Length: 371
Image (cartoon, rainbow, N blue to C red; front, side, top):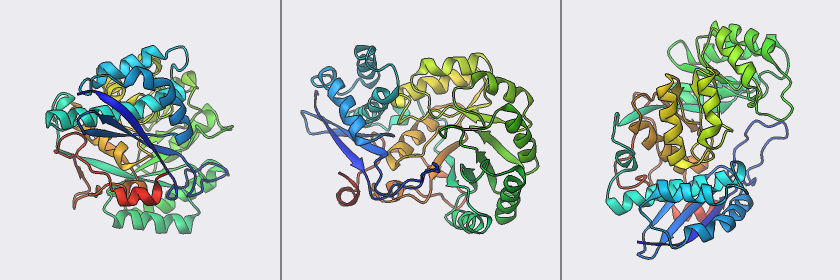
């Protein structure tokens, strides 16, 4: 079975606010679906966390190395794409495009073999995993309402991120945490994402360590992106002295970029995004590298239902995995597949067991949100 074409669909009309200073409008183009088509009618679907224009440019570069290739060798084909465009990519937007293609190739491989991706990645250590509802910080009143709504949707863990946390003063940050813990009670797990990858992030180690000490009082599971994403030395120091676990890694691409973070002991939790870091193949390699360094791996997933499906399969195939990220509410998770993922009564998601990613695109929804 040979690859004959690639179909690209940008998602607009349901884009959620990502916490940037300028905000995000629903029509913004931040996620792209990639479908790999074969000469025997089977296809696989992937997702890239970047705009359609960038994915289209990446695919234009990659297409000659992909069309005509076997449809059942995702790891080899993806590495061929990476190596063949090394001097024009080596990470960044080209790797984002490769990510979408790679996830689609794994979906296709599963359909060809009649197996779920998790089994093809090595086998299932678990059949379900806890999602954390991922939301933005807000003013105390609206924040309380959002938290209550998130708990009502069945989430037993919630991550709060970005503005206005860290953008005013320490007393206000503490007020937000008091509001959050009072709203959800003592049994709901809370994570905090400062959003240090925001442009012109103003804070350094001193702010981060004082904030970490404050967060300890609210039983926070981890403190994410407390520093700019390239501040390796700052993260090393922060991890050594923080009373709460330190997490980062969502903006890194290629497995080689993650190696110093493991070897230097810069994180407690690493957070590669399969829709950016190189797809399931590269995320699988990074997750095993983290395991070998006794560092917890938690996939970043501020994207689509396809990205979530990929994270679920990888989480099933890793010896240690505790959470997946679930952007909520978001139509790109709740409407673009026929059977949306929902937490069960205990707050867990079940890993799909059908061939491939185990999902089916909702073509009617794509008429509304796709372009």
